[in-house]
Length: 248
Length: 338
Image 1 (spheres, helix red, strand yellow):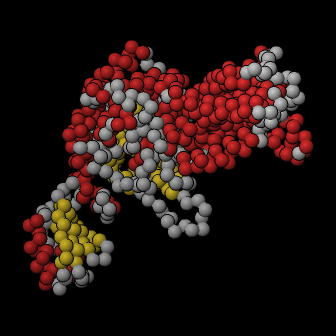
Image 2 (cartoon, one colour; image 1 turned 135 degrees about the vertical axis):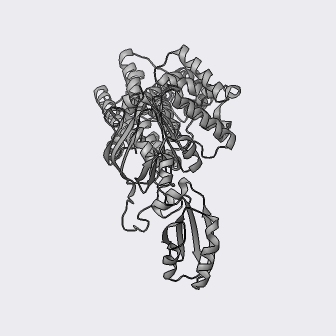
Image 3 (cartoon, chains in turn orange, cyan; image 1 turned 60 degrees about the horizontal axis):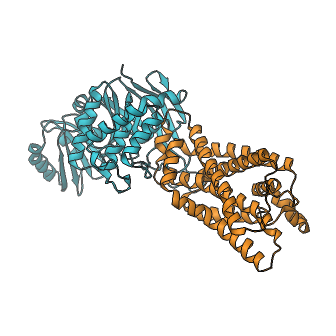
């Protein structure tokens, strides 16, 4: 089944690349290049921004890669029915979707790094001091996005896709500490507490901690625990919703 | 060894609207007025028990919303019954799902082909889900494409396929893993007569290889032509089971004359009863009479003169030849097409 998704992904590769990279690329260009280049932002902002952009691309790709096909396959083409009849437990089909989504999210995250580096250079100071932690964060973020996609994709109706983006994705991105570090919110103490329910905060802060440790960030332990918690929560929720959808 | 199918007292109540597993069939709403109830409960199966013998072609016959698709859904692990049990061979469908799924092939009512793949890829990937080796699955795909006359379109995406082609490909897909039991939900709905005949041939051939076939239909001709035995289903339970011949023999007389009157007198029913060849007279709604008889058209003059002499005004006459349709009418008082 993974082979089937890989096959389809390869066929739609160009479209997929466009939808994954255009937005972060533009953000990187405007915020990193234009704003910094024109002097509105200090040069160090580039380095601060990059982990946030990686987090956005990964989360966006993962959610998109799982949720959209699920919505279409369950409600429009019903194509998934054939796989629901494969001689395995239906939960495995959901898990396969999550793995496929994770792979795409990882690819998206890793491709953004050289891409952004090309646009932003010179002046980006990123270092991967702890490769193992970095890899762990990447996997956890990918898992969070794919599980989130599963939960959303199985809970949302076709006609509510637009709503999902304006109600879930947009606030998540803007309150996700992607364009600013969490510590920058200390002047808004209430908001600073509220955004902690947003899993994207931990994704961007975690990436910030491993890529640009020179800036202040949330503690690594807190990030890992939170990401792990959200992964598990969303996976359980997603699997439950998936089974509800697949068996009436 | 062929595998049979059994269900025991299946009940299913949908608590929300359109069931995916039931193929989107229209389910008659029992409580259309239920304004106060937030959730409308739709009973689809009401104690359905059934036995399909190993290696037979069995038909579920009934109007839309009778519960045919839901029955197939329950037997194919797509609809969880509210109560009751179902078996494929010796295996409980809801306790040994993975095993059961290996034994069955399903052709859904609405095509659910993978629009991101070509016709051939659909078959090959399907076989891969069942763990069939790469050489074997490629060979089987080619054979089935040939058999279903799809070889020319094998490398095309299914997006542009006609309804008939999609239906053929769906059946080919269901046969890819050579299942012991094949489920076909309304297999010939929307097919042209030519394709329908090809389809019937293929179903018969598959059955001759010792496989069990369960199909649902509301097409009498199809049920008559294909099925060894039939169950007539209405309102979620089985009304009658038997071979098409035996079922037809249970209709009194065989012919049905549906009469409609502008006005009607009570004695009229009794007077019809006394006509030669009339087996049973039933009043249908207010102004109608259904006469079950062993002759058809030749009764009309006598009926007409009887009606005239009792002052009843005959407004419509419809003669039905002996068929399964009459059987349905006899059991439910409604025509299949109502």
